[in-house]
Image (cartoon, rainbow, N blue to C red):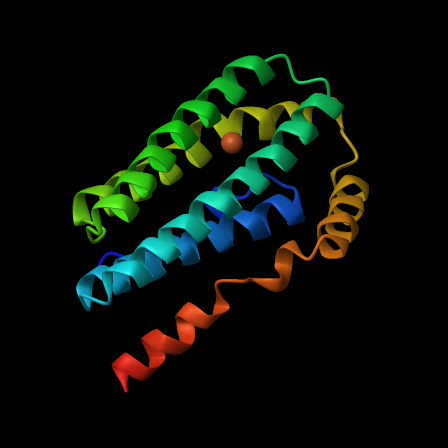
Length: 169
Ligand SMILES: [Fe+2]
């Protein structure tokens, strides 16, 4: 079983961003579980859509961090995000319309993209934050309050875990 496991090598040095990356790992792992167990197709597509929604929110926050910290690579980074969202959004829509289940090929793509993106692109801005002495803790606590107020951590997809638990039991 190939699960995404978060470790310090993925840390960008900003708590709120790290937490969101952990959540993305969880969602990809959840999707993998759904595929392994051949769960209901509509359900797996719902998990995929939750992943896309959460990713969009996360990218928005991350891009704001890059903007506020004066990161020169912001435009290129934003391009990477857009390309990824375009691709995964398109796949999710198609699966939804065609009532197709999520494939291992897609999960592998998500897994690899996430790992590579954090290890390479995100680490580049992490180095910039460290180099410039950006106040990451203050920024993270401000961001945490804000996303908390928006209910982003309420995990609307939480119900999917319950169903997986039932299937496993
Ligand atoms: Fe990123």
